[in-house]
Length: 113
Image 1: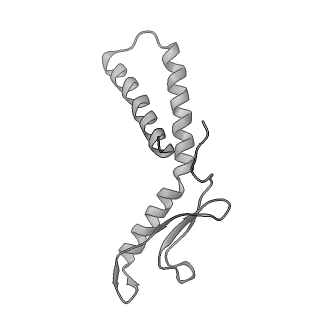
Image 2: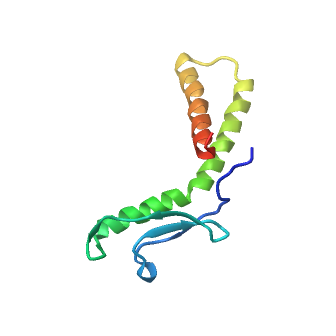
Image 3: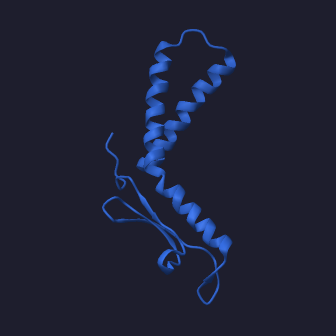
C-alpha cells in the first residue's frame, strides 16, 4: 500500500549540535518532518534534561519509517502464519488475535486512515 508520509530514512539533528535549540527530523530529501523543542528555563536556556528528552523524541520520530516497515512485515508474517496454524491453546489464540489487530491499527494511524 502506498503511504502518504515522507519516505525514509529520516535523519536527526540533535539539540546542542551547531548551537541548535531544538532537535529536528528531516526526510532523506532534506524536507522537514518534525521539530522537537524542550522547555526553556528562560532567555533561550534549556536544561540538560529538556535537551535529552527532545533528542530522544527526535530519535523515536526518526525511527518511524523503519518501525512502520517492521510492523508491516510482522503483519504479513502473522497473516501467513494464521493460514498455517491448526491447533492453538486459548492463551496463544488471544495473543495471536490481538497482535494483528494492534498492528493494523498502528499502520492505519501512521497512514492517516
